[in-house]
Image (tube, rainbow, N blue to C red; front, side, top):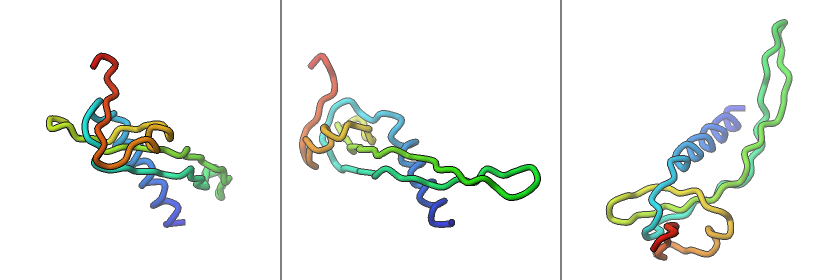
Amino acid sequence: MKRTAAIAIAIIALITLTACGGPDHGTVRGKSYSPETIVMQCMAQPKGGCIMYPQVYPASWSLDIYNGDEHGWKRVTEETYDAYKVGDYIDFREDR
């Protein structure tokens, strides 16, 4: 049960870190993939015990981007994740 809680905390931390969006252009410095994870949760009952139910965390793909001024993780699609490798330049801006 402790391992399940640790996995859930790690996933939530990754989601929180990637939610900020990261830079919209720069050099890919790292890649992170998190597979879909199912964590069993316990809903406590007023008279004791609990009802177990699954909490699904979908797979996610992120790139660590650095452009000299900004640095951060940006969540991307699986296709974008697969298309870029560390060291590649990526630009999400529409007006280049």
